[in-house]
Length: 91
Image (cartoon, rainbow, N blue to C red; front, side):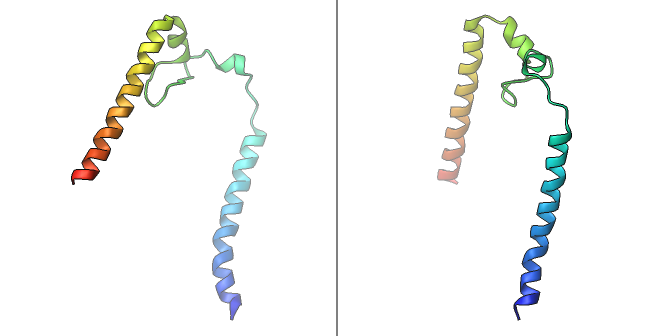
């Protein structure tokens, strides 16, 4: 009685474990990058997806400029949340 039902539950779990195993092998098999070789590169976008500025571009800005960027991101997030909640409330 439980055999066929149990098999229905086990198959998705087996598939998940197989995918997880492949992904772990990819991570383990990848060459580790040193932080200092990656942090200040054009490929690193620390504020993504809110800003497309790279770490190199941010590093060239003044402290005040970076604070302004962060404040703008925060302001936009608060407004987006407020607008979303207001829309849900009044729809």
